[in-house]
Length: 485
Image (spheres, helix red, strand yellow):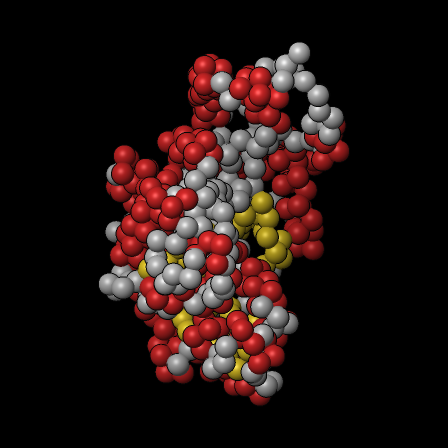
């Protein structure tokens, strides 16, 4: 009869790991080849939630059973295939295989990132990759920051630092009621995580003061004065302006220099949510889109969007690196032993997470081994692809573009001849549902002032003009088939 030690030794057996690892990499390489070519593979193998819950039931054997390869084949078959060139959906990258291998290493090493001694190599990588990103944005010497788990956590971290710097009282220690109620000025089109962050901080719905946008969905800087006055009249103390560099709905870039001027005049914190679009700084052709970002007090930049690394890896960058220590100011003597609480090497002092994966490993490795030109060319190529796609849509006569794209996000709708305007919204929803459930394409939709639009994010570097022409043809064919029926 096997003892626990026997079973544990088998579970940790290096030779078994070697065999399974070789088999798994071969399996994933075959999958990657199929996915990148889009051969006999739906983008999304659609199934209702209940059906997939049945495929992966909550029943587990008491003793070891089965092999890894058949199990993973089931996982691959049921999963969404982001490497498919006709994935044009959410802002989630088709990750570089090298980055995925780094996640494999990170998972096995499992070096937590709260204190230096738990993750010495990854702590050094994080420190220097953050410095590199800050330098790319043009932030000054002395800039710094951390990596965290996604843009929502990143924006919350930045706003916590802004609160500590600009509230005029110690809200971290005294709570939200220790001084006047606070608010931040935010474009109407900002990501929902900004409002979520202010509510997490206890500011309520008025913690966000909306600022109107123009016809291109960019924050109107001339409207900031009125927004500031309205917040003050409502008894709120504005502490910051949040601008977008690549908004979620349309990919719009706010006029950052003008926002920076306003913040300087009024002594407000200037935060840029560049989760998607901060990567524009890597492209010589499109760097002008983020002009003014170097004046920000804080910036959020997602590497898992436009730097092709696996999720999640978000940089929270501060113009004054010392500000990164003010987001979280909490004692944890079992970790930090009463030492200097501003040591860059103990990252848990500055992040929402205590235990954190070695997220710097995948970005640092890809930059080191693949070179920076790949990332610059990728940003340029996807932004250019979006402009060509928008041009063909506009010239078609039966498609409408919501706004010329700033980046690689294109919002459009099919407007077949003879269809009443009152039916356009419903048509976009039906077309999207048909295409994604059939597995031909994966795209999403958004609601703008004029109505419902289909929304594509051209984030897979292997998506080509021909794939987008096929998307237009597929949408037309669906309408024709419906009318023929």
